[in-house]
Image (cartoon, rainbow, N blue to C red; front, side):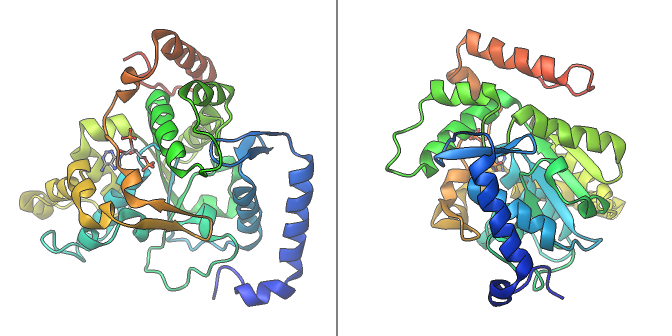
Length: 332
Ligand code: A3P
């Protein structure tokens, strides 16, 4: 059974027409602000979304039928999504591929997941995928259909200062050529106001943090920095979370080390498949594959942000996270 109606069927589909109508109305009435790579972002239920992504969210709520075995990778943009896709795919499929001739040697990490936020726009059928189906999303947890909460989620977040710098570089790459480049000062102001695709950053992170406290067996909450420091520990965590813990025999064979090596920035960024060509995100956007690999380090923000800028972001995050129990290494 298909999760979404076929494109043809949708033309007569009354619900799809309602969605288009609702979307039109929302675009006319929601608060809006200038965006990073789209002219405007719209504030929908507390989060800033571009028009197409907003429509995708409406479609998701009406049509998406999760399978109990589906696995979702959620993240804020530029927090390590590409890395986690590779880690999750290779951990789950470690019995299927040998490390000398691995699927990821000639398929990009992005190709192993459906990007829920764009694949559903306009309409996608997910029936041909393997089990478990792998999906990624940047939507806040509170923006997702409640029926998805029975599935497993891995969430990855990252120091907001590194997210800001990574996103600023990335957005300038995908920004249409008829718009002037986005300056760092502009990007910084927008970020501090909470205005960025899927933001405010802190609200999106907190939505998963709170859900992970409530449903620890359903949401594995990870930080980019902890994966950098102890990638092997994280691979073991992922395997256990998916109900396929690393066995003693696998440990002895060095499987965990192989997964970490395969998914390392150095390895992935040097593979031909991740250097040439474009990644297609539904019908929405084609992005140069090499754009997903820049430096892959902790603390590159130090090369860009003044002490004053650092203090301002740290201050906002401290205030927003106060009492939540979530801490970032923002003082590093
Ligand atoms: P930088 O721009 O700071 O280098 P996303 O995948 O969510 O879009 O995030 C992209 C960021 O993750 C980029 O950060 C990118 O370089 C980094 N990245 C990509 N692959 C990585 C890997 N295998 N290990 C560590 N970082 C990685």
